[in-house]
Length: 395
Image (cartoon, rainbow, N blue to C red; front, side, top):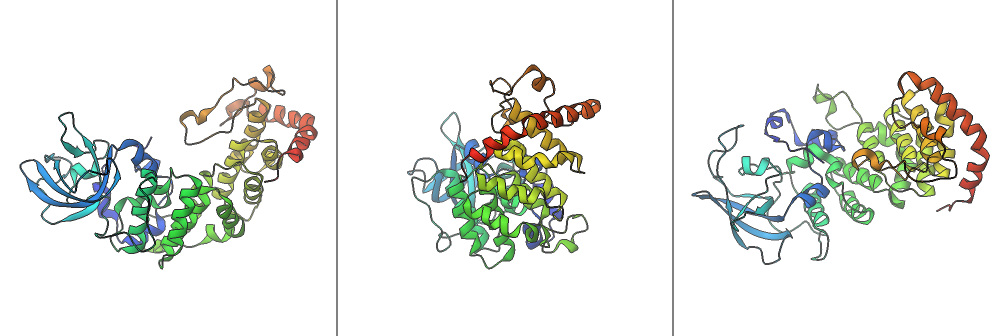
């Protein structure tokens, strides 16, 4: 779960929006930010509209569109709000109209108030993190009433990216990570919208979102451009002395880490990256980790040569793939706490020894013994696992 965080202390460090869009991270969990999936899960009500100040503990909110909640919500709402008088929070109602995406909830007495999981809006209603341009969505951007709230929210944010100089602060920090939680089809739709942007940095967010989606289009993009994407310079990186990564390699690694597809094409593309010694180590590690997570017969055959990789982390991922396959572990999902690790399933190769030598992370002092065990295990089972891999679907 993404942590709560007040972004106000971070804002003085933002020199220009353009730079942040270039260098924003895809893995927003570490930054305490929220993806559209989190926002949908945590919110009772989400609307797009304008706050016009207020008095006596009430802010006036004019609703343009309802993202989550009854369609009858609005068009005019009163939002309960009291200044916090701490953490540099606003101590007076907004003096000017503020158009944004607002996250709300119903209190026990039936009144509407800001959602408690988010600090920025109740603390800073005059300058919230989700400011968007007033008016209709950008041309070509739309969603239907039956679409999921997270997709509606993604369309609103994508429209703000393409159509405005007022980019929501959350995207400035989150980058492609803001779109985590969408289905493959939804993410591809958002990526296609961003591909039409005139700003190269926005198009890059679209491309990384496409890759994370793991669909055919994203895999082909990744296969054709995995070297050039990792080497693409971050716009404005040289102007920020705190930025030690001057290319998109970190963002690409995060996008690859988000791939959930287990198709044969996914394994082929990830193998090309993981085994390419010209690729940045961070990106190779991400591809190797996803192969470990899949650990199907095809993935195990693909990652097996990396057992002796010079990088100890990549080598460990290869050993872990052996261990997960041998012990019939389901496909791992890094978004699930504990990686949904299940060692209780039966499998034809599972034994007391495979359990005793199970590897999923750093091995410590017994690393040489475990590595030797799994290398010997692979020598004994390579032929049968290769046969299983060849018999598996190729799509």
